Length: 277
Length: 292
Image 1: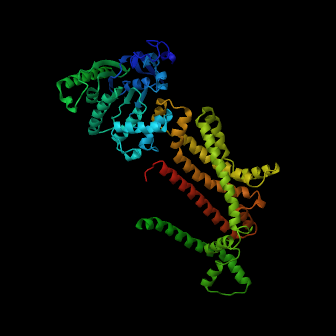
Image 2: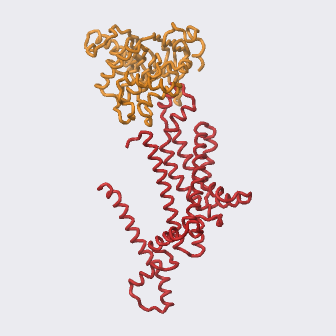
Image 3: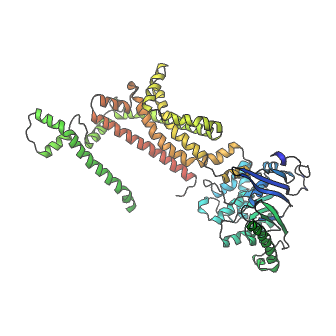
């Protein structure tokens, strides 16, 4: 269990030049009553500052597990993992990342502003600073004017935007997003995707984004990590050639379609493996 | 307006049906005694309507008619100074103070045990069976032991009776709160972990607010059985007074009207107490942004 804390690649805690995420031969095996379940096997990945990395693959490929491992919500059982040059646990304790879950997970008894204030209260920000950050992050996700509303008064898309504001409020440089728009309809999703790109451009954050939508992954990412199941592993890493500035109609360009085809090939390869087995 | 009638009409219908049934039952149950009395008094054949009126106006009926009970409640509460020992208000006040003290102690004890159990696996396994076992013992057996036992060591008056109330009312609170404090979903707990929140913060910002609905549901049950605990405990301390003593005296002296009056007073008291808890619940719900 303590494998990750020692033996870090650079051996320096919080080194400024360390990659944001560095996984080497990372493995995670769940012990279940039916025997061992290999969720992650030999994952090697480097994520540099300012990248937008998507993880795509069929269910059971370990993409969410990998994200949870970065967040120290799950402990790897082999290999090494550093976040900002520290162990994942140290990074979590340093509040190095904001996490956006599949569901908005807003606390129903708190108004939107109080939900955004939750991490700020826990981290001990002053009342004045809380107010300033609530205003700024709700502005950033276009939810100004909804401060006093309660979660049930907002649509699913707005709730998820509020949960993104909550993850941004304490200014972590790394944003971990686990299929944040998976439960939303396509129109809302398109809209939030382009907003997310603008937000990434404005805040210069590093974003790890789990999805099972090929267009979403290609549209958003600077790097696409294709994963396959049983055991969960990385089968392809695609560096996007698209410019950082991306209007929605870039999705009809030949360049976009070529990257999407390569992602699809990667996914198909893992599927034929499944059918043969 | 239509909505108001829609809610009140069914209740009134039931009340009316109960009254009809009650008056009918009073005739039926009091008839034998009335026939014997009329025979002794040498009254021959009397009209049925008059006979019915007689069964509804006995001094010590087997089943008093509703208007007799209402008259007794009114005369025993408004007709007598509340400081008089024959006043229902005097006895109701004793029962009420016992109930409230016991309920307060029971709620605090229930919450404390629930917090301990949810934060300690060993406590969960070792305490929970005893808590459940405590409620399998009839309160009628526990109350005299507590009241008489504590009286022997010099503790008399309100406290021993309140402890009996506490013994009953802590149970729904501890069972409810264990469930309530464990009700946050794993995603809500994970969120706290990503903020590196300490256990204290997880408790006050997540577990405690998440358990509010169950706390109030448990407290409604708790305050009603707290009153029952108080009444039962009063049976073991006749000198102390209370609605329980009125019930006991009524049954010793065959004063059925007095029994029913005390019974109704106790029921009304319980209803008011439950309503007060319900009002507090609605107030908290509004502050917690629940849908109107």
